[in-house]
Image 1 (cartoon, helix red, strand yellow):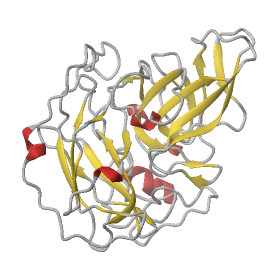
Image 2 (cartoon, rainbow, N blue to C red):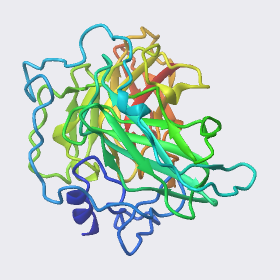
Image 3 (tube, one colour):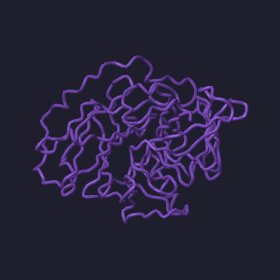
Image 4 (tube, helix red, strand yellow):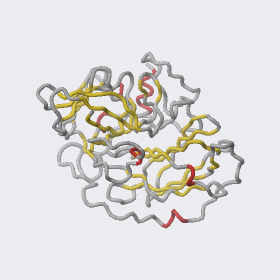
Length: 355
């Protein structure tokens, strides 16, 4: 089956030019090179093949064992950001192009990636998703250096941008993805160089303490996180390795949550890993009712749009804070369960808001 090939290619958290599902009944279109659709629009151009290709055992998360005795590498008080000197190194832009109204010339972007504390993360993968000349695509990713710094260049003839979104992940670690919509009005240099001084933040997640034994990856399994959240999912439908599922509850006033800009903050916010889409209608789930809502009370669920994520068959734009369904408090008041027709199709960030 086509999805068998896709699964092995996308083990490292769905590098963008992997593949799209073709056997689940959806109307996805694969490019000859196997690109995925980007930003809810056109197939990817200029992407890279999936990293690795073979199924490998994921390494233990930074600071602790995979299951049990986990040591949170992000525990502690955040420190003031200390931008690396390389951010201010000379940068070669490009010859300016005349852009139509509503578009901005961008030739190169440089920024950096940190953890919750503010320490640089090396070997994070950063990818630039753009809309140029009305066409959406995600470009070849790059890795951060020892100082957490990355540099990405746009493509010739595709530098007049109307949208620019950064995607950052840590392929080999338990960390949330970061999707950052860039304010193009800040890229006003004549040579199109954009220097992003506010870092992208990848929060550490806690691995599932006792993951289920998966003997049949096409059968439904329940994954129970340390927070008490239960996710019912078919591992085969997850575009990443299920042993790397993890979660972290994050206060909405913490740093780096740019996807909440312009939106009402949820009552609860969870960062999930690995960055992944889920085929079909997604996974149903239940979370403890820590909001102490009354039995039968309703909540709204939001997630951050990721690569290849769909809602009602339509691709969601990367980085968009998206309402995807509702939930109901159980009769005993103990849990909040996703309602019928509400499935988690983006493993990224999950917001819960009482109605």
